[in-house]
Length: 132
Image (cartoon, rainbow, N blue to C red):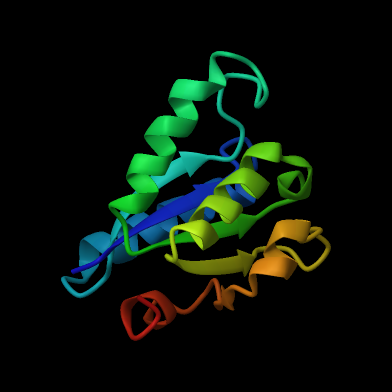
């Protein structure tokens, strides 16, 4: 079984519901990937000194995973953390997955450049079979 980091916006109700849905799918199926969840907006400013250990820890976690799923919410495109994490995934040659929960949400620029595998948010098989 592989492991996926799910990068999502904790304060977005739709993203939170998707997190619950993913957790339920993971618990119900042995072949569903193990999941680890990251908030798109950590409690520290992106360019602060306090961000250094957070970035170091995120790099380690990305290195130890098969890939990262970026859940695109209303505020995702504004997050420096999301762009940094996408670029880190690409640099480490890990699989990058993306899902847009609402068609009106803006895709972060780093995702356009990274060419992720887009998945259907309502299809558990998209994650369980073949994507990782």
